[in-house]
Structures are given as structure tokens and as C-alpha cells.
Length: 226
Image (cartoon, rainbow, N blue to C red; front, side):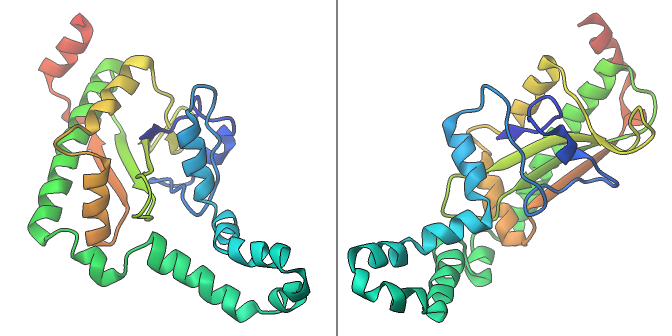
């Protein structure tokens, strides 16, 4: 899981938005700041379609190098290349719609999304209480890559419908708020479990909205004491 905020990436301009939720995959490339592990960098790079196509076409490149006399013929065979790219994307990395739906039953999908919603509301309630927010709506947005046969890549952000500039924004988070977000997943319901639910449901972007007027007096008092 990568917590997405203007402070955790080198190109915060990529998070500019006109409406909530802000999608990332397939629209912009984000570059994590220092502290991001090599695994996260490689996984983000692998989301770039052009680079994945190069991986799929690597056998053609090797063939041209190992057998120079056939290099021209190999370079002039676009149809086989297109077929290889399609098979790599659709059959190797992803699941068909039928196989994706079979990952989880409707009941499992509902339970998984309900659990995510409960945890997200709890996190947003604590963030709103800690900041003393009295009005507005916060969104906890969880976006996952659709690629199944790779380690899950999950982007989590807190987005506000009305930021300081009177527009939607991806919020900056304190260290304490970041810790709260790490509680979204655990051994009982992890990123792979959510991906299974998302693929079965055919939607990998989850947006949990929370009206900050719903923060209880007890939660606000606890935030002040804490």
C-alpha cells in the first residue's frame, strides 16, 4: 500500500483534481519520494503500458540479436507482435471476466466492501475529529491496479471536496493520520483480499465518503484529550 499525498511524491502537480475521486492509474504517473522501496518503484513502473509491451516483445528482440540473418524478417512481423502483446496482457497478467467474477461470490464481495467501508469511516472520523472539522465531506479513496498475477498495488488517499482553495484536493496528512490509514488492511483482510473482491465486482476504485458533521462529540473530545 502506498499512501498518496502531495508530500509523498516528487510531482504533486499530478494530484490536481476537478472532482472527487481522483483516479491515478492510466492517467498520471506518480514518483514516490525518498524512503520508497525498490519494490514499490518497480511495481509503479510496471504499470506503464509501453514498458510492459517491451517486456512482452523481448523474445523478438532476443531473436533478432541471436539470429541476425532473420532480424529484418522479425522486425517486419507486426501481427505476431500484436498477438504476443495481447496474450501477455489479457492471459498472463490479467484474468478474463469469467475468471474474475469467480474469485468471490456476491456475498463475499458485499462483506469485503462493508468491512472496507467500516474501517474507512472510522479513519475519516478520527481525522475529522483531530482537525476539528465542523463541515464538509472527506473521501477515503482506495485505488488498485487490475493486474492480478503481480503483487497488489494499492494507492490510498484522503480527498476533500472543498480544500483551502475552495476546490477538491488530495489532502496532506500528518504522521499520526498516516498511521491511521495503515489500519485499513490486516491479516484478516489484506490488499490481495480487496483486489479479489474488486476484480469479482469489476471495479478497482473505491470511494468512501464521510460527512464530518457525523463525528460524534465523544470522538471530538477524545481527539482533544489525545
